Image (cartoon, rainbow, N blue to C red):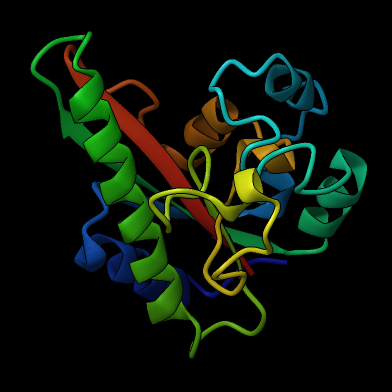
Length: 183
């Protein structure tokens, strides 16, 4: 099933107007899933494993998440690219991650009247709150706004970028984040 070109272009424009550096609509058939990404989470390479409601193990079973995502026919994929002072600019990376989270929420909000039951996915751990209530074992403050990452759904972002025509790496001293809305 193909999304009408004008509708896809409209969605891409919404993402660009919201601040995305690039955007594309792809068929869900082009979305590559890898269960192995969950093992990366379990190694806790980002430090958020078990510390966020939207991260493993609390986000849900990987097979169930992949199955849920595969029910969607299309995906609006978008990216944000931020300039860093140098490749060790952790402060700049964190600021870019927060800006990308804001962008993802903005895009999802603008699409909610156009798309029935969208699945908005972000980059990395949810950043809607300064600290996640998971660490206090208290329910999420904003379950309607909390973002689960593309990777937590097992989505291979580098392959998705290639399938969409968006660059995964965008030059020296930059960081690129991806988000998406499945529909």
